[in-house]
Image (cartoon, rainbow, N blue to C red):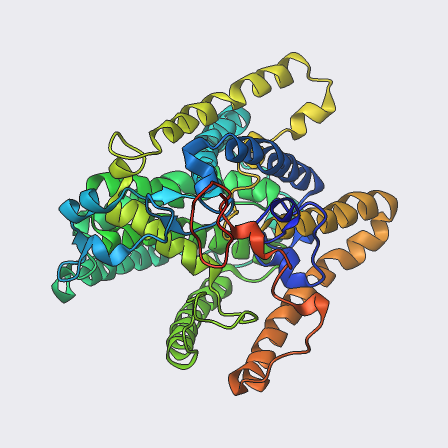
Length: 492
């Protein structure tokens, strides 16, 4: 029952959250996401969490009952937390193959494995979906952009922005070349500590360049960005197995570069509608990037130095906010893809080779839905089916929890479907302002509470709505007979 009701480690049936960080902490504000996208994501969530996950768990696929139902941690064959120090060479920070083979293959919770499978399918379905639905428009736009003889049709916003000086292309070229050179120096310098050769930077940039367009199209129409992190980890893990630092570094340049590019474009889009001069936007973004990078680095250093046992859930107090769920996934991904490598996880040497079929499934699934929409053009609801969003609907779990999805979906459907259709003027006037205010309020109060209370070891008010637990401690326990886990009963 606790697995069914837990909103943190279980299916989350009946769970809900009362604070905005629960709503928007992992999926972003639902108030800025179209109702059609929310419905697609929630359909995918229900299929993954309430059909695929229970079936896989209760039929014991991949020995699912030996591990928690939902967890971002990795385990050995005896269902104990995987001891990474046993398989890593402490001098070279690479995989010790002999030790790994004598110790254990890596095991994952069934939800973690399912998340990777759905991630494979989401990636290929995104490329196919954009090619089928937007390929013709992209091709025509590209041809029109190359043909300078044709007069381009401009909307009112573009005509007004013509009054400002455009950004010279050489600004972008100089910045790109300079950053690539500095990145190469960072990787090959310092004794090659990051394990990534110079060509890894170029390959990562090439992948970011290729995927920015299809992922950008999906982001522009749905306010959701399918993750590119899996394919970057997969490719460099095959090329440079056993090198975790090379893997996370390549992921940064291949995946984070694309994410930052889309954020950059989104900011330019806002400036376009707000009639901010493009050159001012460019300089502001560049300045903001430098300031943010400096502040983020300083903040991380400060927290690591001042918060005892930060990110170590076994040693932190039960109500501690410093559990670092995103960083925990990042760390375990570096073990799976970098240290051990995809060949020993998803290849013939691993336990999860069957998950590779998700690549093919994701590539093929958009085709019949696209064909049906062409055969029945008058069926309006067909055009709202978005396979990448459906397939990747539950792709944020972990580090997100089921309660995050349930609350996010409920708030989004209420405002962007019910309020939008019944009180459209109110929605147009207040929704986006309210969304920005809630986001800013959470960020401001987070800083204030830390320095005023938590930094001085002062806890908050203890009440049922503020408890970090969901009162289902057994939801994280294995259900296979004879498996020993900390804090869990052993089933005979």
